[in-house]
Length: 221
Ligand code: ADP
Image 1 (cartoon, rainbow, N blue to C red):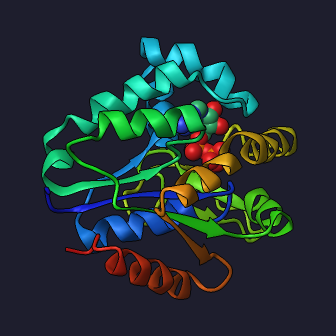
Image 2 (cartoon, rainbow, N blue to C red):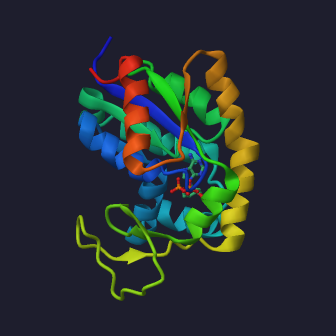
């Protein structure tokens, strides 16, 4: 079997997936593949893909399984993924996507799925304060002090409120998570690939819990 870290991070919006994935990507030297970041980049570039998904993303809906599966299939063919593995963030989001992943990643099979568990009321307050770097995806928390323009400490990009971090879109995304993504928990549980991790605590505490699980699953090699 090929080496490398090959994991999926599941968890509600605002559970801390983006932040933890960036750290995990550096720690294991493995590509962080965020389908949300990829789609937002396509919107910024005004590509055909970007134009076809812009309205759906802004409203908090899900793009079609067919389209996102194709995006991930192409991404997993790249050399960095083939050599180092992947940390998937935001994909799969439906059981259809999870089944497709098992097929498209046959030569790079998933080692485990980490479900970052954070209660809905806590993620709601986190999301309303969330600001994101438009360029590298780093997350920040707004403290009430408006810093304008706000530049990313990591890459110097613009730090902004995401178009879909409005109350209506947040609620729709959380509802979709319950209906579409929560069934993945049983899908991966049935195949013994699921690891639940408590996502409440400091970033360091949560990071330590996740790496312990990944190392135990053999993904730290
Ligand atoms: P969040 O998890 O905070 O909703 P993401 O950054 O993961 O945000 O995704 C942003 C948006 O991109 C989603 O609301 C959805 O419109 C689209 N998207 C990303 N990944 C997928 C996916 N796997 N399937 C369908 N739509 C997706």
